[in-house]
Every structure is written in C-alpha cells, then in structure tokens.
Amino acid sequence: MANPLMNRTLTSIRNPSLLKSLSSWARNFSSVAAAERPQSDGPSSSFTFSSDGQEPRNETTSKDESIYLKAPSSNSRRESGSGSVTMPTSFMTGSIVGKRFYNQVTTREADDGNGWSVMLDYRTLKTPSKRPLKLPTLSLAKAIAAEWEYQLTDGIRPFTMPLMKLACTALERVPLTRPKIIEHLMRKFNQDLVFCRAPEDNNLTSDVHDKQVEKIDPLLDWVASEFGFKPVVYSSFFGGKQEDGLVIAIENLLKNTDDCELAAIDAIAAAAHSLVIAIGIFRGKLQIEEAIELIRLEEDLQVDKWGLVEGGHDIDIADLRVQISSAAVFLGLSRRI
Image 1 (cartoon, helix red, strand yellow):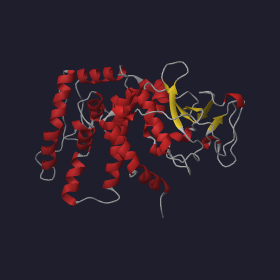
Image 2 (tube, one colour):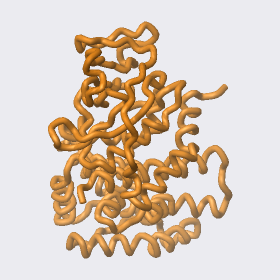
Image 3 (cartoon, rainbow, N blue to C red):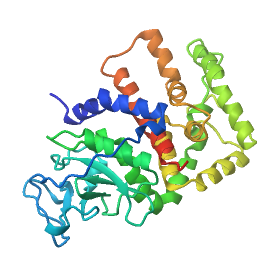
Image 4 (tube, rainbow, N blue to C red):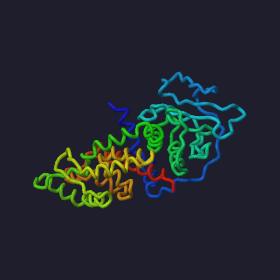
C-alpha cells in the first residue's frame, strides 16, 4: 500500500525543477533576481474572503488547514499591499494546504521600506502567525516568489518550498527561542559527526578511518586555526568532551548571528549531524558538495563496497542534497551585500 507521506517526499526530492533551481542558486546567488511581472487583479479561487479581517470559513478544511485571505475594498484592489494571504500552521509540515488561488507572483518593497515582500496577485504574503513576510534582500524575495510560482493548480505543496519554510523559521521561531536553539546546538556539540573517528586497528573500519583522516582532518585543522583550539577526536559514537575554550568560542559565534543565519546553521546542523560542518558552510570553508561528501563519507564507502539500495540510499542522498543546498542558498541570499 502506498504511503502518502513517502509519495510527497519522493515528489519533493526527485523534483527536477526544485533540484535544478537549488543547484542554480547555489552556483550564483545573484542570478535569482529577475524582472518582475505586472501584478494581476484577476479573481482568486473558491476560498472565502473576509473584508472585516476575520478568518474566513472554509467548509472543506479545518481551521488549521485554511489559507486565510483578507480582501481589499473594490476601489483599492489595484493598490499594492491592500490585501494579505496568511499561511496556516500546517504550512510548516508536509501537508497539501489547498488549491492554488492566485495567478501571478511578484515582489515589492515592504511598506515601511525595511525589507521586501512577496505578492500573490494583489495580496501580501504573511507567515502562519499573520506577521508580514518581510525578507531582508530582494534576491531572497525573488527566490521565494519562484517557489510560489512553481506551485500547481491542484494544490500548494509546502514540501517543495524549503526557502519559504526557512524564512518562516527565521521570522517566527528564532526570535522567540534563540537561547533554546543555541543551547540545543551546543548540547550536541561534543557528539559532532566530525569528532567521531572509526577505530584504526579494526579490519572492518580501517578503511573508514583512513578516509576520515584524509577528508575530515583538514576541516579540524581549519577549526583550530579559526578558533584557537584543535578539536579532540574519539573512537566512539558518543564523541567526547571538547576543550572549554572551543565550546565558548563556538557558542559566542552562534550568539552573534542574525536570525536568518541562525536558522540556516540550525537546519544544516540538523541534516548533517554536525555543527562544525554547518559553521564551515557559514564561514565559507565548505561548499555544498564538500559538506555532503563529509556527511556521507562512511555510508558512501559502504555503498561502494556493497552496492546502492534503490528506494533507500538514493532517496537519502537526494533528501540530504535538498536540505543542505536549500539552507546554504537561504544563507547566501539573506545576506545584504
């Protein structure tokens, strides 16, 4: 029996348009900004509008699954920012949240001049908590607009919109939970992937050890030169304690990030099981492909030895590529040059 969640995941990670877009943005952040198309005042879909700003009722979906639309008055429909679209909380999950209800996607400067907004026809896009989706750069706004433009008429698929998800995280979750995010990252720091070294004196793991020395040691040397403390490696899945000076230096780096940077670092660290790799991307030491190679080092050796399991290894690789690439692209596009 088909698994709906698996089908949605496969649709996302095997989607050639998504992977091609992420790859293109990763190679050249500035190429995302393209000429805007004129805004449309065309009709929306069957979603109920509310002119008084109250949440509309949708008979076919629950409250959490509704896309809330606020309509402007008839004489102001053409004015930018006169309406809004609020995404439901379920946008942050893998659910399909409703049919496409807009014709054109454009970008415009925020009303207060501080940031950029995405427009679905004449409506300003908002976050699940109904905050304006004000993005720090036009390039990031263009990239998120491209994600919305990609959506099909039969349904809006959030799992094909990783940049939108990261933007909502940076705007809503990070400001409220910044200390907890940093605490969580530091709690796992001692068990970082790059600190765990396969035993050298075991025939089953000696090839893994040699590959780790070749590929990971240069990154550890960079950490030592960057922060003044060389990481300690352990032949254990549980890692081991690092020097206090290194721990403090890494924690201070995280505290000095802005919300978009911390959201991207947190996403990369979660996918990579490595805060060091996330910081390597953040500081420009690692490129996307280099990071993926380090993350999959041991598993790729096993694949080379025993073969690739279709429907398993290939999905894992594609999923990891989307997660790391989207976070790295988000990081680059969010920076004001």
